[in-house]
Length: 146
Length: 432
Image (cartoon, rainbow over the protein chains, first blue to last red):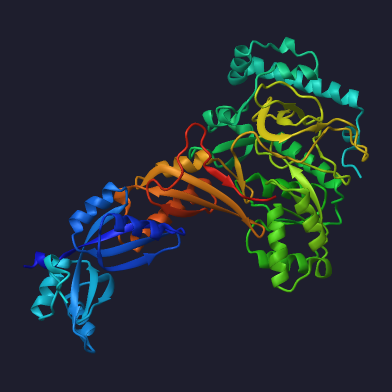
């Protein structure tokens, strides 16, 4: 069950030039890849598109075949109740357990929100959150999680 | 005004005779006592007896920068260490620097050349000269320093950097002349403007001796119009000694003192000598150098030669403004950079694929160099921090090997152009 809560995020290198993101997006469309959530981190000369997709393994192979620079990264998705303090509960649990959040981004669905994050120790993070009764997105059911 | 009118205004025939005597004794000496030059002459099938006039210099084999690299550090020196009194070093192409050495006489002739040059542009004992070339391994700072002292000027050894402080010193000390790169002087002008200082109104700075990088008459006009400073071109490379020769007040070519250097212009492709007035590659033979003689050294700068007597009275031949290079050397903020140096540095970094592009622009007065590199697929991280670290590392390595700041841009594999045949990895967008 624990491994089930660790999700494969796809990270894609995007050169910081006009039209590059459009190109990557067109490849995703051609490959029939549907993004559940994504985030774009940028530096001066490049960007990193991080995406949660339905079938990460399949999408990874398809993108690779297209020559896109892509990497799989383990992230976890915390389901946040639509109430004040929801983020605090998860962040506080991490703080107490000494888990470091490297980056994160939120996705807001019809019934609730998911905060996807990369942490330094995903296994331990899952353990800590589950113990505190915090719900996590499972890799098999991203679409129906919320 | 002349520093040494006997030599500077010598009749042309006498100068040619003097050059011949100098060359003959130099070649005799090297052929007899120096392994490197002896072998070179043997291989070229030329003997000292073949030299019967200064024009016969064209029979001698060429020397190249590669010779200095191959013989690093001191294999080409023709004197013992006890006679060498100074080194200067420039960065090399493959991490290996180029070393030049000087005897006491070498320094003496270098200083003499600069004393003549500074006198020819009217800089003398009444002047206060700020030397804003880098002091240290680079030849510019110390060279101009001793030259200016020799003519009796009060020298302010400012070196490079701390621009605002330099401008304050120009103002406070009544500096009348400056030696620096043309782009640095323009940069000073911009900074002074921000400080509310007008060079014309607030300072006594009226003369500038500018070089170490290519510049144009357009830049000269800009400096003169906006700053009220009369600008003179100076020329020289570390293989010759350093910056040595300038234009005179006529500003119609750089006087290459004939007793110190014999200049030829050749076709860079065939190596054949060209006529005066024809553009080609400058080849120099240093007639007095001791520690490290330079015979028919191919500098790779493109210029032409004018042997007519100058209205100033000097008889030495003049070379026109350097119009380019016959190799791929770039001059960035006064520092020589070869693309091969950059390539070598990048090759040492395992996270990078072999492809790169060098983009040079000029922003305001300063050159900006961007090096675009392709990362290897396995070097890609989803964390911006890791990528930024890689970028900083590449920048620090370039700084270490080139001695100049370059900005690095990371690119995905396959993003940079591929070349078939001759690659065009350098895009120089500077308008000089």
